[in-house]
Length: 159
Image (cartoon, rainbow, N blue to C red):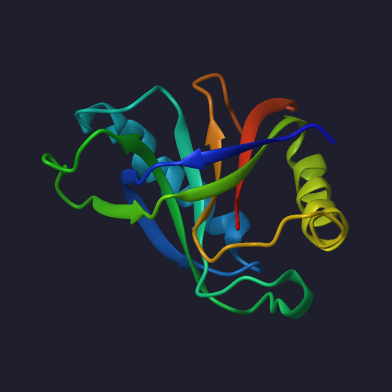
């Protein structure tokens, strides 16, 4: 598997969030995206053209993970500053640290299998350990969940 390790500075996010778990994430994510995407142009000082699909867990350990456990699901964008936040949107600051970054190309069902493989098999047998910071996917402007095949970057916090 090809990957890179990135030492990230603090990441500033503006977006929308909702409580989710692994049973309802397939409902929560599209709902958030439908609320957020029509308003994306309201956000000033965007760092790039990517959208973030982000999960902020209280603590994530795949070996003891409970699909009923709630976490924050975000759809948002990275910004250069938090000076101007559109009404009814929220902010998130991700502390600096290392991320394992993996390019993925495939369908949503292939993504789920790949994500499970990374956490259940690959990571435990690697030199890396999960860090307790948000996990996210960076989605390019071409990303469309209605397409069979998409490209995205998977960002996994490591230490």
